[in-house]
Image 1 (tube, rainbow, N blue to C red):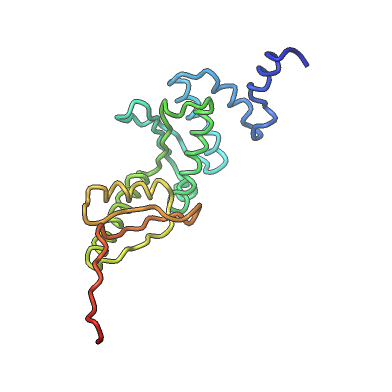
Image 2: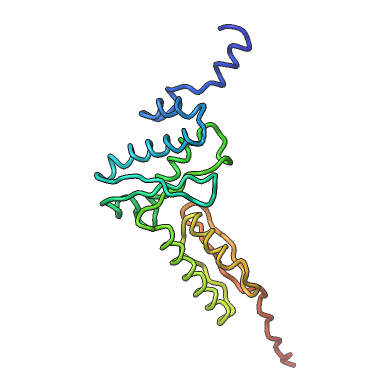
Length: 198
């Protein structure tokens, strides 16, 4: 069995058998990667995924203002397949790429952001517009409004869109796929006092 140190060393090293099929070689690539290595790794992983999902797609790097962010733009046919319903497929691919690229446990060093046909900015505008409309309805009625369940990214957009307002509050409620945002008046309406009946 070896010494205690040898056993601890063996236990701390990742085992290829515990990883999903096809990702064993990727884990070796991520062990000592720099920023450029991470960019190349992210492009390679995304290209592998897209080869099976949507033929003819290309990946290009989009320079961003955030130095820690790797923004990859997918170009080509098959946008509907890659983006999915409300961006769920794109979000899932982005999550998978981030988990592999930052497998060494240091996601604070940056992140990978994926986009296709400017979907992210269009979705941000949609969600922000919807949040502002519902906030206006809350102001007019004085009653809270529960939005439909949405992704964490979309819930964050709602919170950011309404964070400067002083007359409405936002809160996330629910669990799992049913998690949603509730927009409520900042002050609960005071109940009207009834006259005594006697």
